[in-house]
Length: 319
Picture (tube, rainbow, N blue to C red):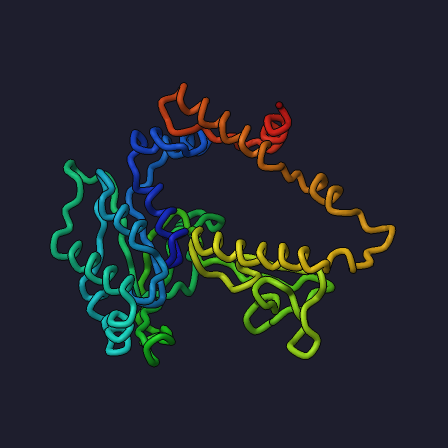
């Protein structure tokens, strides 16, 4: 059972539902291949509180899930219909991505057959379900045996619908041997920095950390990623987000801000910080990248990933 409605949840389901011969040809780490080759997984459930219109997974990831060889993707048409509230229909009209997702899932329900061959596994998308308890396996109280779910429905206007429980006594039990959470995380406060405890982000303007409009930005302090904008977005979102913060840093350097900062003699300096945190420069990264591709070519794959930090650092320093 995988709890979550984003790409992390979908990726976990895809790996668990994929045939091992198809996994081996990818650049997945070898130790993961060893474990997955022994997998006894037959049924995977992806569980979320809201409907398919509000789910955060993207088109590419969902389309891949519909095309897994040897794996059935199961979607309850009633869940799709329940998800098309008046507010959801408005969201579908407003956002092209939601319209395309709605059409893809409906098409799959109407014509569910994937690539040929008998299905060895299944992945079920369960919308309008909220986990309330993990139940132990019979005879082994230290191991999960099932997940207890409440049924939900949508309430509220377009863009801010929320899931509410329909009947606390109407419970569903899903047998499972493993539970994975893919719901993201909330950032936590860091000593010495301002923090918005309601949104769980560091107050900032385009990456420049500030203590409020009256006090302005904290000189030389920046943030990026989920602590900057909250737990949302895909890799592309984070790339654009990081670029925005870097532009702010470059602009402040150009404006002479850093030369004005009085850091004190005890401050370690940027070089010391980078060394302590095992940061490599672009040339070092390029050497790691090239070695991974060379190893992959020998193995008939795109690349073989280096997963040991010490090895990567050693390779990055070899001229």
